[in-house]
Length: 374
Image (tube, rainbow, N blue to C red; front, side, top):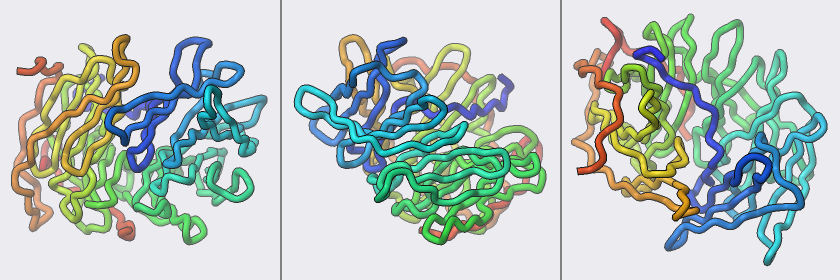
């Protein structure tokens, strides 16, 4: 990896419902895989296995709904089948939902309403958005978006505005798809004409957007604000030598205060995987050891700023490590889109163990040298 490596990792096999009430994963290894549901909103987390008559394939996907059922996506005989799983006394109940015939299909992140589930089916010239759970008659085709689309980030709390990374003409740009207006597509990220601009995470409360773009000359992590005319910024502190840095959770509840939001990041280097915490206002990346058995790249912030990291060990088959992060410094007030003061690049090494806004196309902050900080 280069000094500016930013990894576009596949989604982790552990998925948390939009409201944090449940999570789901494929447990087991090899040919003994089975769905497992975690309950997260009680006094202590606990897991319920949901095995059926035969083990699941390793490429099956699971997604929890807020009513406690788990959607499973299986590839079977050239089509993609969907069922809802739920515990029934000592066994597992299964409600088949139907199938979609296509070559490639992947589940999108949990819808904010917690009751519906969507999937992307990429074709040669267009990508279909499917409602695969929560509809009246099984899987429903919603809209075809031109180009090959990937990613998937929800921009609101109702499950209406979906951001996708759209590849057209050899370039990838994030666009917003309004599912409430017939799939109307509008630009979201247009940092430079020849750049590839992808959206990684969004927080509907504050409008904070986490972006990956090669506009500065190579892939960098940046941030912007949904609905703002302010430009995207590329903090120097998020550049770690020979490491991949991937954001996976944003603190909710910071209404209209994007600079104060805490962001959790997965850091992968030659020495292993660990945790990073960063706020736009702080301009510093805090590196922390991850708990043993962390299901890397997964976690959930509370509104109070406590980060929960799910983990599995031989002694604890279902655990959530709670990490309190210090309160941020006073928010950075940006009055002009001028370049912020650059911070030094940090070494990439594991830390020692303790002691609905309408989308507006975002542009790039002025760059000098290697890029703007802030």
